[in-house]
Image (tube, rainbow over all chains, first blue to last red):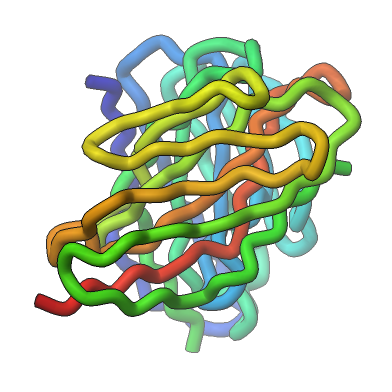
Length: 114
Length: 114
């Protein structure tokens, strides 16, 4: 079973501070994703990557940066955290680029910005 | 771009009742449709997928099909159990634009009473 590990599991940040969420996968997957989950909005794609050292914007990239230093690791960076970024963040990976490939999710990071 | 509309925010049933959840989608490509399930405190996990219109996917008593003509797909189960209580997401997988960016619906929270 594919394994995706997120850290931290929860975090409290101050408005204007910098936050880094980390994701690690051990299954040699090409694609990695960051989604944000909010009540009433489901999961929305922030950034994704299909190869190391390259990232792509998803549907809601504003206020977020991403970094993929290796195939296994994918980070989400909030340079200036804001109250509106309080949410649960999920990292996911998938093995191939064909459209019928499943996503494997981590357990999520609950971020509270105060 | 791709979109998925999942109108039912919450569904409440009693055990052994019939479940039906519907989504509509929009894409210019050739999609694969997925249903993911999320239990409290966990990330979403794949429930089942349907790769071809009018074919049926099934898993754990759940069934799904999609209709290309009406651009709709649905999830059903003949007799729900309390353990089926969870959030269900319809997901569109498509390679439009060359990259794989799964699009999630807003989710349907299923509550099953004993």
